[in-house]
Length: 156
Image (tube, rainbow, N blue to C red):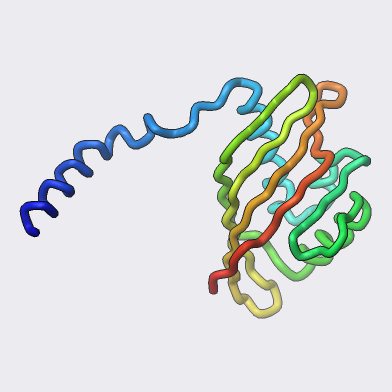
């Protein structure tokens, strides 16, 4: 058993420097969508819904797993504003799974992790989940027009 563990350890250490070579390689168009997605999340993390709103088209519809029906941009901004009044997003990570781009339309499927802090209590809450965001290029700028997903688990 010790010999087998030693061999596995040596093999693991041998391939460790090459771990990034197995990572997804994105095209230039796909990187544009990933950059737009990060900017959208950064805007939310800023705590200012106006920052978020600049990346959202007026035709936007959101359908979070926790909502029974989709919400339009106006209603989504109300809920986001309410959340940000009492919470701050300390950090987040995005792990894109697939990105599709065709002309002026694109979507991205990704997994996220998020750490929030309740401003009143100081309590931190970590969550994770999946999203699909739909993007449209309008006047040379990528804007989100729809999404579906949300929290799938909660860790404390």
